[in-house]
Image 1 (spheres, one colour):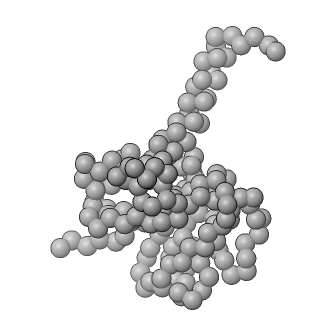
Image 2 (cartoon, rainbow, N blue to C red):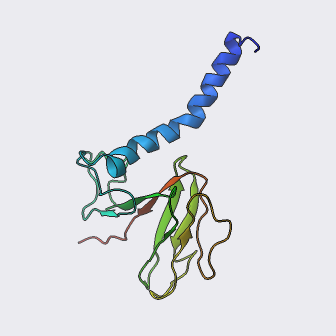
Image 3 (tube, rainbow, N blue to C red):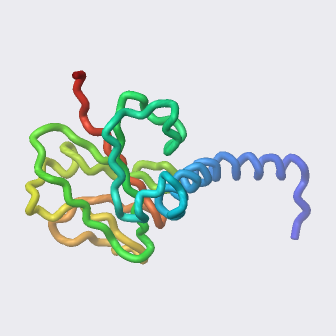
Length: 161
């Protein structure tokens, strides 16, 4: 095995930090929200949405840097065991639910521009589980994430009162 010199060690550490930091921060967010039932931020596990009725304030620490003018909804999906089909009610306005993997890369969008204004009876967007099904069932638009867990966000439209 070749010896690693100081410069190569620094480059390797920098690459590890650059590529690993987002994964660590996302896991740090996912753990209290979907894995640790003793945490106040726990939402009931994977596959359950948590909805906030008020915009965030500095007291909210569920995400690293939340928007302070947006009430959030989100869910973590564990794709190791099974796929998910997301049902969205028919809406007559613009909406978007971005899907991002643990690396914080957006791997798909469920919304008015991508899945259109699907009627409620239409099959929803399909997010494959692991081992990944390479083909989606007929009629299912969707995302194919590379990581075993993803988060779906929802930023509802708000209007001043």
